Image (cartoon, rainbow, N blue to C red; front, side, top):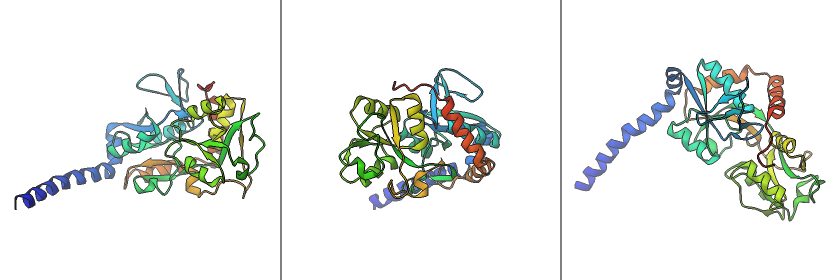
Length: 281
């Protein structure tokens, strides 16, 4: 009888906690508006989507721990904050920490070049897509795989991708590939590629363009239809991550609907042009 009483007590304690978690998501819009600040999580280490730099400009957002954030994601975040009528706060954190931080309420949104994959949709919700890309393989310009045109050309190659991303999982589509341990950051993959520890890494095309802009000894292989990776639209798209059942999603989509395709393309061009030199150099 005592065990049953204790079990009932635990359940009664959990009910308000569960209700509180639901309330956090349901009240996102009110919470953000009353606070007057939109807290957006990103790595600040994934140019041209996001990065950290030492100098300020009319494009940057100051970081609490010093320095400034810029990039395509930052410009999207600025537009969303403006649409909500609040001040933008960028919260830098490691990739693996973004979703837990969102679920815990430490940040309000993830705007970090994140794809709305089926797996991620099990734990968080997403806005409409704000960018659509393709997957490429970054290689050395004078390396053995610079002239590759199809996935089969990478048989035997040492290939990696970022940990806990779709980029890493698609490596399995390369027959005979020498799949390497996933790495935490793109700057780390650039270092590994330049040092010869790997032969290439998977990236979205904007990230590859950014990498070779800062590292001219690198190049990337882009595949024609039927010769590259098989991926769904969501796997190669980028969207804003929010908590499950958040009431802020519709407001985000309204802001995104107001950004034309031409404006998005120009924003990416500007992001690539304004990125700082790679720390991997």
